[in-house]
Structures are given as C-alpha cells and as structure tokens.
Amino acid sequence: MGAMMRVTGKAVLRGFLVLASGGLFACVPEEARVVESGAWIYESRPGLEGVAYTQNEAGQRFEVECGNGGGPAFALFPDPVQSEAPPEPAGPLLMQLMVDEALFDQSFECFGGEHGCLSSAMPPVFYVEKMRRGKRLQVIYRDAVAARFSLDGADEALGNLKACLSP
Figure 1: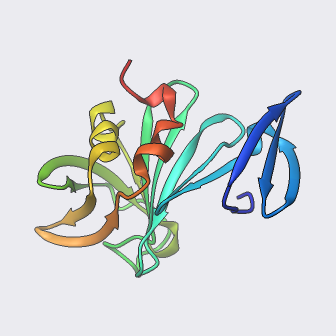
Figure 2: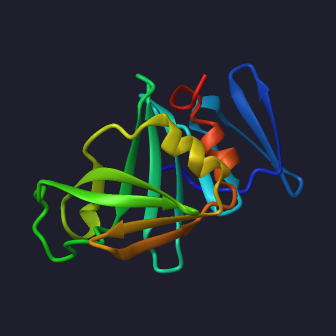
Figure 3: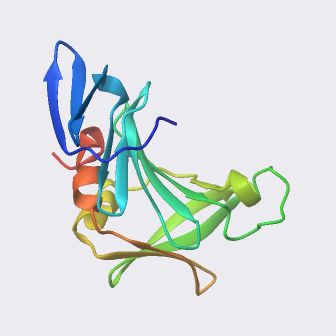
C-alpha cells in the first residue's frame, strides 16, 4: 500500500502527478496517487482502477475495489464474524449493508481474523451509488451490527472508481 497524504494541490505533468502541500512538492507517477477526502481515501493500484476505503474508530476497515472489468468488490477487515477462525473461507455468509435506511443483502467469504471478509458475489453498481450519497454505512450479520462507518467523503473517493459507477 502506498503512503497516505493529504493532497492540497495537484497537477498532471507528462504522466506524473505533481502534489503540493505546505510549500513542498512531490512528483509521483500518476497511477500511484493517493487522495484523502473526509473519512474516505482513494488509491490507484496497478491492475485495478483503484480502491476507496475508510476505517472506523474500532479499527475496522471497509473497502470498495474496482477492477479493470468494471465490477465492484467489497472487503471488510478484520473479519467481524469469525475472529478466531483459520484463514480458510467459511463458505458464503449473508450479511446486510445498510446505507442510511436502505438495506441490501450481500454475500461474503470470511477468512478469519485479520484476513477479513471479501464479497463473494459482485455487488450491484447501485450499492456503490447509494454509498456515494449516503451518510452512514452499517454492516449487519445475524440481525446485529457488526461494523459502522461514516460515509463522509465517500462521494469524492468512490467517484474515482469510474468503471464501477452507473453510466
């Protein structure tokens, strides 16, 4: 994972992203940029369109990744369901994602502890669109809240995942 930084000014110059912050300038390849917005961060990554993520006060992290094929994927770290399980999938587990008052079903494969949970079926694009406009995301498992995240800054960070957004 690249270093995180708050971007206060930027420009693209011959394939390099020029970042300006507090009188300091840095040139990094454009494909390796990190943009922090509110509680969400966007990172471009090789082979992917990028990943947008946030971390809550409990140290849980929620990621939305977009592959070059245009389909989103979700990840949750650490595994909130089987924190002591071995790093092998426990089979698809049905969880719900609640964005404000809207509830969506999503299946995840959970690998135990720090290995986290990964969406096992491609989430519909409208889940990502709803997160962009929402205020709060809750992950629910067996009728209990397993994780809560702010969606402050999600619109800008998720907006960078253009291939995973509605046309």
